[in-house]
Structures are given as structure tokens and as C-alpha cells.
Image 1: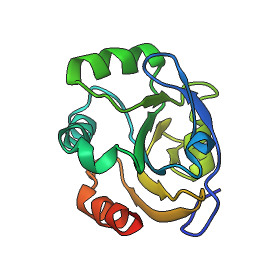
Image 2: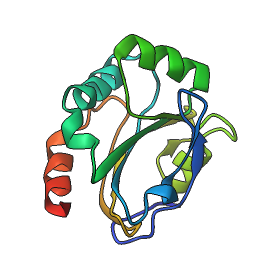
Image 3: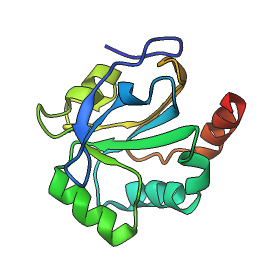
Image 4: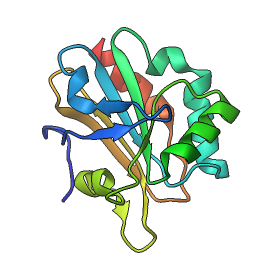
Length: 153
């Protein structure tokens, strides 16, 4: 299955790095949500991408927007990485059932068991308004996400 622009975003609930549950639908009517799938914590490209979000957090977290980063890594892995890198946005563990949320969005690389670099922007009504999926080695460009978010404000 693949999620496309115009689709209702599949709802999910995953634990963040503090072991708190985060449900996508809890933001409905309140915030636009940037859902960022990434392959693995502690890897150079993923770290570069999430540090870019961290360093421009005002674009990705605030009154109108929330970023949720998702990988198949475990909660303790996310907790350690978030502490080391100063990530304040939720890192969500799609650990078990392994890759279930990534699979629902059509970004699970079944052969390697990790998510592709998928970015989905979900508006306040829960509709996917932007989607881009990059291969595992290809870093995403966050500028397009910024432009889409600016248009939603």
C-alpha cells in the first residue's frame, strides 16, 4: 500500500524517546504534521537530516506544526540518540510490529527491513498535502517542506 497526496493519512500511535505514546490523529484540527521516515539512527545521512530539522526547529515545530520522526529503531536507541544530538521533537519507534507504520505509508524497504526517506506533510484535517520518497542513500531536501508548510500557515 502507498499513501499519496490527497489521501487521508493513516493514523498510528507509537512511543517516543521518552516512552510516551504519540498518536497522529491527536494533532487533527490543531497542527499540521511533518512525518519524517528515516532508515536508522546513528547513521551519517540520517543524523545530518535530523540535525537540519533541529537547527531550524522554528520551521518544523510550533503553534501550527509538529514534526514526528519515525524509524524502526527501538525506543532506547531513540532516547540515547535524542540525548546526544539534542533532538526535542519526537523520535517514534516503529519497532514492533516491525515497520508496520512505514509499511502502511508505503515506505518500508522489505528487503533491508528499514524505512526509505519518506516525508509526508499532513494538514490539520488529516489529509496528506505533500509527499516525497527518497532512496536510502539520498538525503532529503527540507526546503520544499518549508515552502509547503509556509503555504499552510
